[in-house]
Length: 164
Image (cartoon, rainbow, N blue to C red; front, side, top):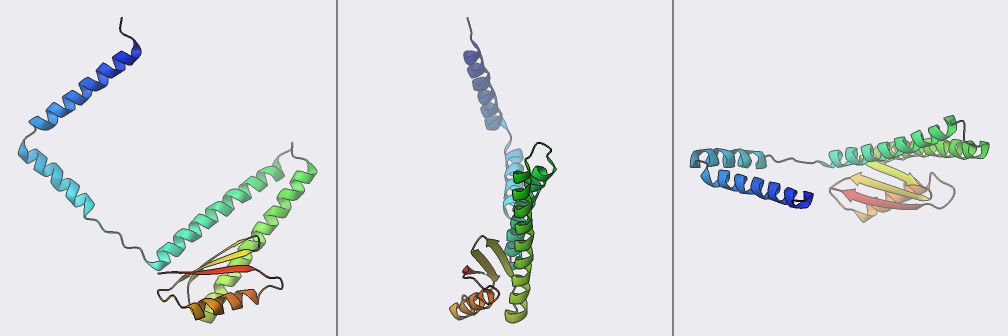
């Protein structure tokens, strides 16, 4: 009696055998056409600039924030949520909006002061800045850190990374 496992084995083995025979028996012309198509597909070169990397970071950050906003809005609109859960969700939603505004403010400040494009992400007490520049200048990084810290009364942990 043939069980399902043996049937699958025989089916897959015969499929592999048929494909192997087909591959061995095809003409050289057909094989060269297939290889030429593969080579053409591999020759495409994609060049990524600094701004593309910043845009990718920006999109990823926006998607993350959008998902959090939707989650908080679901809690706010859910009738089964308690008043305390709704208050926490509302506060988190406001924090998210405030951090978005602060990120934009820091980006525009870096653009004005240093004439550099930047990606800024704020999470709790940490501010991460990614600058689109090929020169990895520690003095410029120090100046960016000082300028960002001037915007806040309390101490923040600020990192600057050069992407280029």
